[in-house]
Image (tube, rainbow, N blue to C red; front, side, top):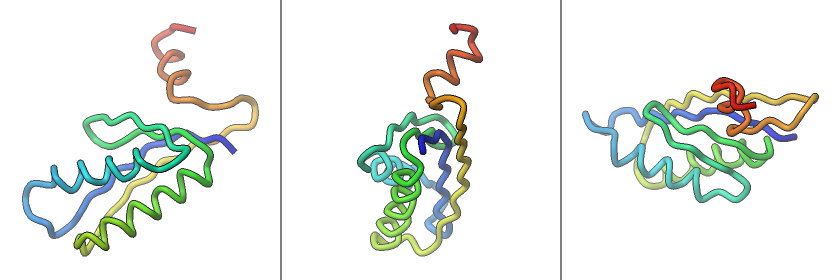
Length: 99
């Protein structure tokens, strides 16, 4: 099942600046097979098969914890549909009126 969504990872207890950890989180999620990403100011938009997105989130948590981040708070929004194949590009085009 194809899905689109947004992932926002917030490392907790790592200091004032989160930039290095957020950058690392984006690198991890972008490196996962079957996951397309688009970074934005408050998180990362994702597209792919639902099982790939969920697996990528698991890898993200496992990796950041293994690298020393003790606590993570992750907000996840996922959308699926059965009437057509969802895509990030199509959603943006629809809002802009490009379709």
